[in-house]
Image (cartoon, rainbow, N blue to C red; front, side, top):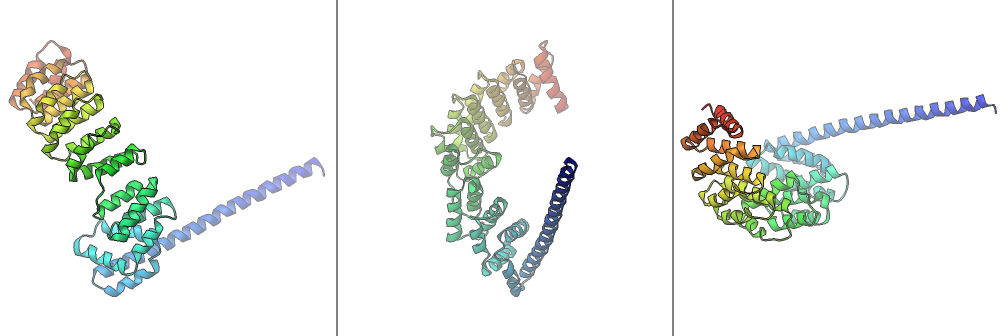
Length: 346
């Protein structure tokens, strides 16, 4: 065969491959669109049945039977419903779903299928508290690092205890990432059990990052019995930990934390001094006004502005010191004080 013939055959083969590829893409799109339309129709049918159940039509629950094994569909629909339905209506919906065995399909979905579907099933399963639900969620939390945090959150929503120690153990061992979502869940658990959080501060295996999260959670607890533990951590060797402890003391707004806050204002680390200034203002520690005035000349700009902001929260005595600083020849102190006074309209 001539070279020209070979070139034509190659071109024809490439054209056929391109045609086949495009046909495959078109077919895939058609199948996906059809599946999406079916999914939308099925979801509307489920929603219609749930609304009918809430309206008191008990027989409407039978319309849910064809979908009871569609775990992801039921999970997503149920989660949307639970976000707006409360009280008796919620109980009616859950009872109807239990009648047709939806919770069994959700439990079966925990170990198979796509990750988004499994996550949705875990969240929805929290609506069906019971021994089987608890066992299924604890098993998933123990066996799957990818699903662990979602399973623990679901356990908590279902009314089961999730100890603070278990959360910190998992994070310390690397089984849970110290993400914002983890921090929020840890805060919820510590706010509910502040003394458990205090007990965990005695651990030596906590990284500074985890200790910071725990201290922040204790500061959000509103429990004054944690002040002693926070004050002890305000002298921790790690500067980030000291700053977190001082911020937590400020958030509690109790004068018992004044000594630790005062010490923070003289800390060698500027981040800790800034935290001390912020805490003094948040807790309205008027006795620290002179120390805050001195910090208006701090080498770190953040400390200067935090000190100025704190003085602005201390009432007439703080405003008087800001006016004095605004007249100083020191440009750093003068600028910090003047800007704060301007913001306060004073």
